[in-house]
Image (cartoon, rainbow, N blue to C red; front, side, top):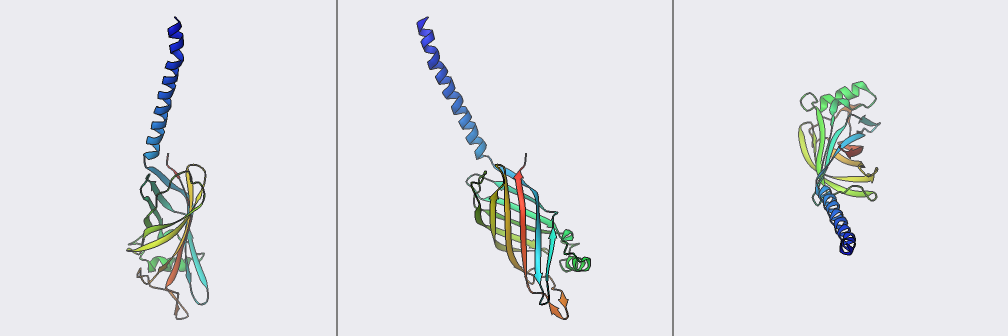
Length: 197
């Protein structure tokens, strides 16, 4: 009888150790799986400059996905319908859709890879995305600076801003008083990604 009473704590200790190892192994396996984040909300804008004024068009109809892969590059895709950008002037917006051949190329898109990212973020991070921008049916590689901020344990906020050449995307630059807008346009975004359940 004494033996079985003494053996019980040792048996319980072994069972507790086995359970702890199983939980730790399951947690590590969960961390090792890729994690998919969907764009929850945000906006993207473009800004162009003419000698007489500056124009910004913005859309909040943005879609996107991020795939976090432990120990591997983070995959990113963000896109917006060209027709949803609003500059506050409907004639200007119609001309922008015409200049980008929106019926043939209805979406502006950025895809790329970031260095490995792990959630939850421990603090803000500044990274560079090796990206590919598609506009007017044309793609160009682009190094895109991205600022990441934690937004709870299962979400991340991303801000970015980068210049493009309108001529490089074969976009006919509009004129005002016989002066074309600058070739340089700035694309900027502020988006929130959250883990897709």
